[in-house]
Length: 165
Image (cartoon, rainbow, N blue to C red; front, side, top):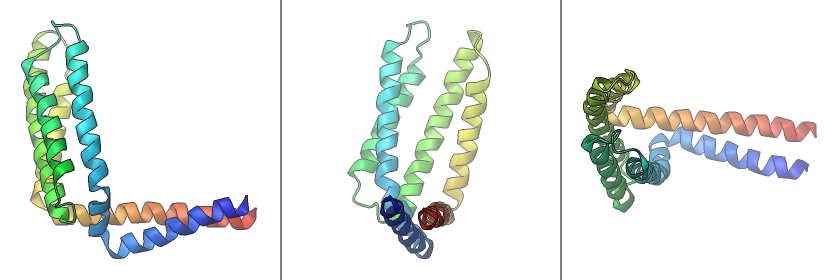
């Protein structure tokens, strides 16, 4: 029991220290997972579009799903995951496109009596996309450091728990 807690904790500590010293490799490491998430989100959006009532469908929702799938394919097929700047830049463009499409879609849905949440999320996505484009390397380093700190906290707490067992 003690060993089952200690081994993953030590692995988390080692990985956390490594990523803290090389934060850009964290983005390269999780880039594939981000690409997969974007692709799955696009497929899910496309399925939701076709399953929803025709009165709630807009061409902009369909376009958003297709664009998301395309960005997912670009990221999944890219051999440039080691270039953290490219990953963040592509994600920033994807977020900008989705934000614009969400604003257009929310305008049409609001005329049908829906709430303003989609409108606000569209503006939030636009702001996030602009921030990511403004400094992709800083964003990569920030995400890498944050991920390493999470792994360090998990490793330390797991090690302490295993020593107490």
